[in-house]
Image (cartoon, rainbow, N blue to C red; front, top):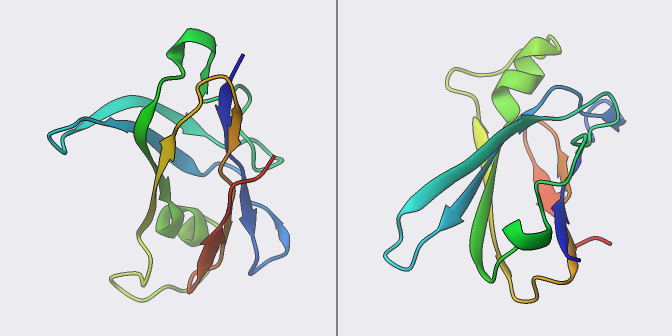
Length: 118
């Protein structure tokens, strides 16, 4: 069965990003967002369980929102006010609900990148 997972790596400090708040939204055809769940990353920068799995996986457009400024402030980084990146939204699509979709975020206070992982 398919599943959706994520993890966050702190490239500024060279470590997993623990305790990052992540919101998962389902996007509807009319553009409205529906909040599905809110999770926090563990000490390894991962979520303890998949964000979606089995029957919860569905074809469509999804969005992960990572609360990055909160994470870096908690780590003691001096950020501008407002922070350059407050939140990082990643919008992606699930085309095969039986596949594993892994959406990692590599982040610093000034940059980020992502990809479809395995």
